[in-house]
Each structure stands twice: as structure tokens, then as C-alpha cells.
Image (cartoon, rainbow, N blue to C red; front, side, top):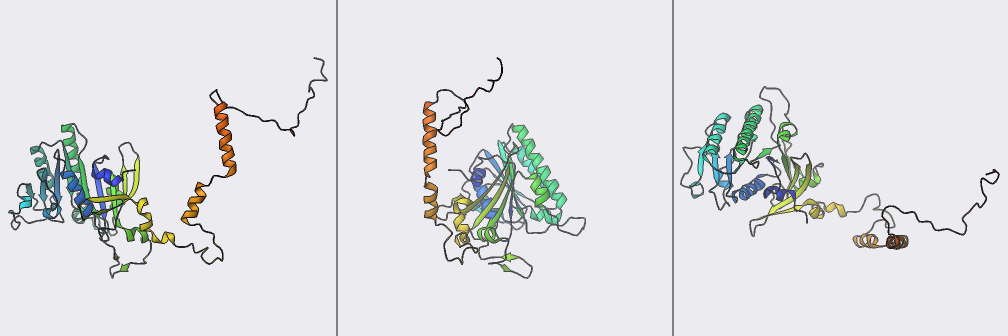
Length: 355
């Protein structure tokens, strides 16, 4: 059985250096991000650098049993009002970011922290780069480039190539160039798509199945498309594009949900749950729906058809098997069976020549 690509990425069985989780208001990517944190934190040889802009670090660490290898960079909370007595962060290396507009300060704090640590590999998890993109797009990508270079330098110093950056990007939030030029800057299809080794696009099943139509959706005054399945934990779909170092590109669509009994993430290939995602696939074809006779086949009829061996196929298989047994030489062979109706010319074509 093929292991889903998402599961291989979560368990570091597939090499990646920059993963972008792209979500919208219809389906959040934070369930998947928390699962990445949970998986990475289990590896005590890998340090998790968690940079928070949109959520409190507490929220990400709710189900983390071990936090010894976690370092928090908190750009969400205020240092003068945060509760330092909370047990979740009591033994963490904790850093407050006072001004998110000053990306140089963030980079310097990250560099200083990495120098003090002695881990063989690092995973930098940014809860969202959308707040930075809203401030300045070019500054954000310069920040990502410098952060990536910082981790690459760490790779060189430790003779490894396993450092990783994971971030969430809200693709439904428009980002405009800081120069004031009007028009939407398509971040995903240009810069982010270029620098990311892996792109994971999050959708819900209803959005995935009926994205091109408005049937089943409620369109609000600001044209936001909303449906009853949005952010429902049991209806998460991710479309993955993964570029390997060899240049090969893998495309795969997986579904996932959290098993409430054990708290584990269940991942499946979408083709394994295709019938659940597309109930309309069993509806009759409108071109044959009103006919007085049946042109379609049931599943049992299709199975019987595929299993049926036609007479000429059976004889051909027997003939080939017989020839295989009688053939002692390798390579191609020509077999000729004379027929009584064959027209043979027994006359000598050179009979009129004096040879």
C-alpha cells in the first residue's frame, strides 16, 4: 500500500527545505501546522523554532508532551501583560518580538539563538507570513531569503542538509505592492511558489468538489464564498506539489482528519475516498437518462465483463504457451503453418536461361 505523500512529509520520510501551507477562510491550515509541530517536537535531536505572529504559542503547544527542544519567538503577545507563570512555557527558551516591522531584529535574535544551541538540525515554523506581507511584500521575501540563508549556514556548520522552514499563507488576503501601484499582487503563483520546495493547498471537500460552481454556497456581501463544511475537521483536503532535489515534481491529493479517540491524524489518498467526495458520480448520465433501454453497466456487470476471457484470447494464450515450451533459442522466431489453399509456383524462374 502506498504511503500518502502528506504522511511522508510529516514523518520526514520525504526531503523538503521550505513548505508553504496555503489556506483560506473556507478551510484553515492550522490543524495541519499543529500536526507538523507535534511530529517535529518528538525528535529530540531536532530543534523547533516557533515564530508566532497570529496566535499565542500556548495554542500551538496544547498537545505537546515534550517541549525541551522548543524555542519560542513570540511576536503575538505583549511582554508587559503576558502570564509568565503558565506551566506550558515555564521551561521554554522564550523570546519576545516587540516590533514585527523590524525584520532585522527578528533575524538577529534567531541567529543568536541558533549559535547558543547545539542541535544537529532545525525546523523553523512561522504560524503565518500574511501579517508580514500586509506590511511590505518585498521586505517579507527578503526576510524569508535571509532566514533561509541563516539555516543553510547552520547546515554547513553541522555537515547536514535537513533544516526546514514551514509557514502558513492565507491566499484569500490580497497583498498590494508597497509602492502604491494598484492591482492584486499574486504572491502564490510568483515568489512563494518559486522559493517553496513544497506547496500544500488546503481545501474542504465541498469546496474541492464544487469549487467551479456556486451551488451549495452562500455568497456574502463582500463576495466571500461560505459553505456549511468550512473548517469542519472531517472535511480537509490538501493538494500537494512537492519538488524533489533531483528535479522530479510529485503531485498528490490527500484527505486528512484528527481521530478524536486517540488524537492521531488519519491520512488517506483522495482516490481511496473518491466516492465519498463525489456522490454525483453515481448519478445517471443525462444523455442516456431518458432512454427506454439501458446502456450503462452496474458495478457487478463491469466486474464480470473485466473477468471474462474471450475464446480467441484463450486460444492465443495456449498457442503462445506451447511455442514458449518448444523454443530453445533466445530472440525472435518465425512460425509458418502451410495451408492447403496456399498457391505455390514450382516452375523455375531461370528455366529459359542457359545456365
